Length: 79
Image (cartoon, rainbow, N blue to C red; front, top):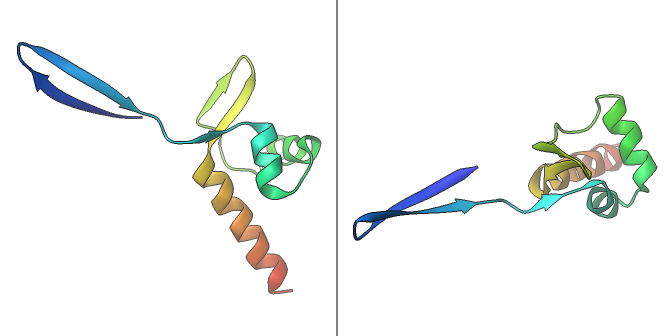
């Protein structure tokens, strides 16, 4: 993740910039799928790589999930 540093007097201020994230439930909502279908695509290696795997599960950058959804919509529209 990007970090922004600025001199503040004698100390340094560090601000972490975290992009919007999506877990399985959010990814399912973006795609119009259920969580099980997202998990199936993840297991098959047909889903974007997560940015982290937490105790609560995988998380992706929301923009990666939205790009994946847009690509799928374009493919379906061209059929």
